[in-house]
Length: 232
Image 1 (cartoon, rainbow, N blue to C red):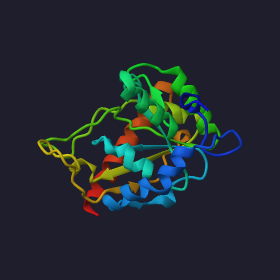
Image 2: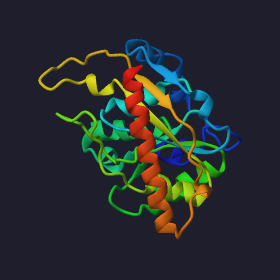
Image 3: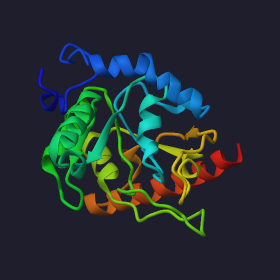
Image 4: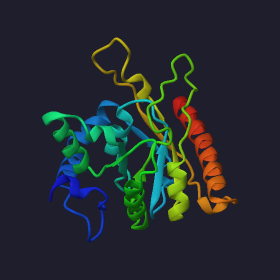
C-alpha cells in the first residue's frame, strides 16, 4: 500500500493495514527514545477505552515524537502541519512517506480543513485516539516559562462533533532538550501527566459557544497539568 493511502486508516480492527514501519519503530527505536529521556507517564488510568482526543502543551519539535513513542494502551494518530508534506526534493518525499507510515495525517493550518476533520471524525468513531496540540504550533515561554499560546478550537470542535472526550496532558522537560546556541540536544527527564477526560456533553450553549467553553477548560487543565508535571 502506498504510504499516502494510509492517511485516515485505523491502527486497529479489520480495516487496519499492517503498519510495518510503525510496529518496527515501537519495537526498537522508540524504546531507545524513552530510555534517553527517561520518559514517565503518570495518570494513564484516566485514558478512556473508546475514542478520544489527546491534547497537550507544545514547546518542542520532539513533543510529538516522544509522545508517539510512549507506551500507551492505544497508539494515537497525530495531526501534522501540511507544510511537512510540501518539502521539496527527495528529502520532502521521504519525510512525507515517513509521516504517513506512522499514522499521522496532514492539516492545513488556519483553515477549516474538511478532509482532516472527516478523517479524524471517522477514526474517533471507530474508537481510535487522535492527538492534537490545541496551540497549533510550538510556543516557547522565553523569559516567562508559564506562557502558553492562544488555543485553537479544533480539538473542541471534533470532540463536540463526535461526542468523544478530550484528555488533557501536561508535558514537562521537552523545553530543555534544545538549547539555543547548542548543536547537540540535552537529555532531561520528560514527564507526561494525564488528566481526567473532558466530556463535551457537559457544556451548554450553541455550537460556537460550546467550542469556546470546552477550549477554555481544556487549556486551564493543560496548564495545571504542565505545572504539576514540572514539580514531579
